[in-house]
Each structure stands twice: as C-alpha cells, then as structure tokens.
Length: 527
Image (tube, rainbow, N blue to C red; front, side):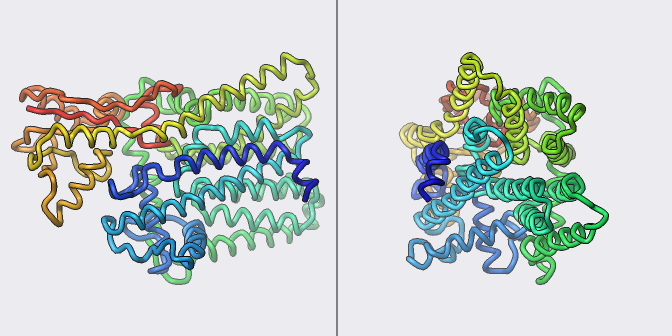
C-alpha cells in the first residue's frame, strides 16, 4: 500500500484539489429555502429519473431524464446508506415545491455521486497512461482535470461524468488487451464497453471501437474469431440487462422521444443561430477552445497532426492508430447533432484528446532542455487559470440572488410583474421563482402575468433574462419583437444585473451557449 502511494505521489494532490473545488460549490444552484428547482434544470430531471426508476421501473417518463437506466440505478443505490441513516428520504417529495430542505440534501448527496465518478475517472486515466505510455501521467491528467468542461460538469448530478468513467475503463481494458491479447482481457473490454453504453446512448461509438480493437490487437484472428463473437455477446447482454431492462423485460419507457429529441428536434432548432460563421467553424474555433481550454485544445490539434503524419503514415504504431480511430468514431457520432453537439455532448472527446497529447509528449520526451520544460509548465498554468474561474464564479452571489434583493426593496408588494414563459426555464430571480410557483396555491408577494410580444395589455413592470443572448446569438424573433414593443410603448430600463465574467477567456453569449453553467443577465423594465 505504501509503495502504491509513493509511486503515484503526484496523483493525490490533484484528487484532493479537485475534490476541494467540487465540495466548495456543492450547494450552488440546488433547491433550498430561497428557491425551488435547480439553476441547471437537467439536474432536476436526472433526480426525477432516479425516483421514477425505483418507483415505476423506468426513468423514461414525462418530467424525467430519458435514456439507458444504469446511471440512474447506480445513483439510487448510492442514496441507500443516506436513506438508512435517515439523512434523506427521496420519496417524501411528492411535488417540486415540497420540502425544499430535503431536496437540498438529496442533491448534495447526488452531487457526491458525481464527484465519486470524477475521482475514479482521474484514477483510471492516470493508470491507463502509466500502464501504456513511457511518460509520467502528471501533465495529461492535469490538463484533463483542469479543463473547463470537466470542472463544470463535475458539479452537477448528470450522467456525463459517469459516462467518461466507463469509457475510460473500456479504453484501459482495450489497451490492456493490446499488451496481453488473451480472451479474458477482450471479454473485460467488452463488458466495460457494454457498461458505457448502458450509462448513456452517446457511447454508441464504443461498440465499433471495440470491434476495431479486436482486429487491431489480436494475433491469429482467424483462429480466435469465436473470441470476437463471445465478446460481442457479452457487450449486448450487458447493455440489454443493465441499459434497457425497462424496455426489454418490463415493456416500459418511451425511448422514441429520447432519440427524436436528440437527433431531430434539437439539431433543427439550432438553424437560426447568428454565429458569424458556419456552425462547424464556430464549434472548432470558438466553442471547443472555450469548453476544453485553449491550451488543451491547441495542444491536442498539434498532437493529432503529429500522430497522423509521424506515426500513422510512417511507423503505423497500433496505439496511435487506436487513439485516432477512437477519436474519429466519437467525432463522427456528433456530426448529426450539428450545433447541439455543444457542451456536455462533446465531453466524450476529452479522453481521446488527452491520450493524443500523451502520445505526443511521450515522443518529445527526449527533448530534455529547460526551455521545453518551462514552456510546458507555463502552458499547464494557463490551462488551470482558464478553468478554475468556472468553479470560483459559483462562490459569488448569483445575479438571481442580487436581483431578488433589489426587487423586494424597489418594487412594491402586490404589483404585477410580466414574465416570459416558462418561468422555470427563464433564469428569473430566486425570489420571483419561488413566489410565482408558490403563489399558484396561495396569495403571493407579487402578481404575475406571462407575456410575449402578442400580449394584448402588458403590465407596467416587465422582467426579461438574457436579452442580448436571445437577440444577438440565438436570434429569438419573439423576444426581439417584444423589446421593440417595449421601446415603442415607453418602457425604460430600471436596472440590469450582469454576471461578472472578467476572468473568463470568452464573452457572456459564448459561455451561456456552451451550456457549462447557466449564467443569467436580468433586465427590469418599467413603463
């Protein structure tokens, strides 16, 4: 045990600092006594998926996150010890407005589940690099851990971080099969690949990668074709029993809605965005440097170029081929989503970008000059500096909190405030969100009217969110018309609450579009 500790001495500070950052903001944006619902509503749907799975046998129901069941099942199992000690009771909540203190506790525990998968993902990546590359895992793991997308998604209860854990485990097993091409190792790779797909459907490329790895790494394929068939069988048995048992055995769950929304509705809805360039140019040169980090992204592009021209074409290194083909399959799977490949959906590329960088660093390891070490240290520092603000931002008061205080001091009780539908998804001030939904059952502090540009008579006070984003990036024609009407009818901007993004390497619109966390600017108009 002591030997393992000292052999991996640089891993433990990374895990500790990563865990510290996540625990620092574990309560950010979850339901509490001040507001119902999550700032990032995907979390609410994921929690509801856990509840529905254990209550009805499927998570593929209205109001819950759809998709394979594995992560929701594991999330429910993770809750069991906390239920036994009576810290939480998930089934005591019969509505989204009930028992907000209990909801806060449940989401704290569920975020610990994400943290657990985050920590184990880093460990698996460290081991994968250590076992298969002649280089210290320190720099690649630092770049992985301190990427904006990883730090941001590690703060939510969503299946994205867990998915990366299973993908990394499958990749480790495939590379282990490369070192020792025996049947047992390939069957492990098949099992872990099946678990990856059971966690989220976006792991579909892991299946052709698994097949490709068999042909790439096996010796005497013709004699061992039965091993491939057995591996495929284990993959599908794992997926059907742990991924879609609700559909297969219980005949429950609407998977059509899941795939239709992801493959048809979402890509079509992104056609009107004003990007100033074709969508793929925007993704490659604006979005990816933002979510992965400028250093990591540029470093990976150089590494991929190196792998293609120095290793794939010249030496045909099998590890290089495996990394490039895996990256290709996952990239190809995202193309159908068009702009909706943004944010968490592109997280599946991160492990392979890191492995390409690892391979490149291994090849330039022989350059033992101080300037080279100094440059790499500087680049890692830049990556950390770009990424950490995505966590530290959440330690500040949110605009939804600051605006709540101003509103209660400056808008008299009983007045009518115009809100855009649907308030739960508009990022409105905490106080108004709670008052609006609780006021549907009892008299609220304010009255409310849902408005758009066609509303016959607008109230004297109108609250809008993310007006610049809606007007200048997503081309929300309804909001543009509403703003024009407010101007014509003599409404004046009373106050505007804009988040402080000075330490980010991008602007508000691009950050909000990334989906990494729901920043909100709030504008209050009065006639």
